[in-house]
Amino acid sequence: MNVLDLFIEYKHYYIIGIKITILLSFLSLIAGVILGTILCLLKMSKYKLLSILSTVYIEIVRGTPMMVQIAIVYFGSYVMMGVNVDGFIAALIAVSLNSAAYVAEIIRSGIQSIDKGQWEASRSLGLSNKQTMRHIILPQAIKNILPALGNEFVTLIKETAVASTIGVADLMYASKIVQSSSYQPFNPLVIVAVIYFLLTFTLSQLIGIFERRLSHSD
Image (cartoon, rainbow, N blue to C red):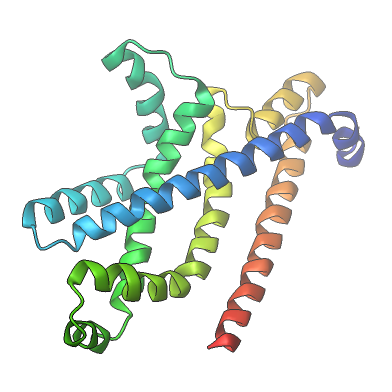
């Protein structure tokens, strides 16, 4: 059975895998942005302990494989709390925590790219540091980092493939099902590779268009 025939016969598994992969990546990015913003503000805080804790978390997460992090959340939830967490929820938690570390650095670089004169101008207008960050700095930083967040989404789509190791029915899990059902070890992987490429390439092109529009609006 060739690749096309194989895809047609088992397409329902791949369609489910695409939906799960995109959903997991999107929800993880949303949670990662929220947590990453908090981590970024903590890292830039004038309170040294908060800054150190945030920095340590970011470095640990960025220095360990996502597969290990997913396994820790999935199996650790039972070992430490006696709770069996659903595979999708465990993957969502782990990927969100992972994404938060990278998003925190993206946001920090966006904030630091804002001219320091704007801080001084805000102080001259009587705004506090908190008000300046909320109303002036963050809105501009977010605009600058939107393309980078889009690239983070693309990265998550590829990296969430490790969620299949704990039984999440994503694209990689779909390929395992097709492999066992069709007794073909290679062709199901080719199909998955093509699907991943189409997803990430399309998103990358859309991000590029969005980035060019942003540059024109400036």
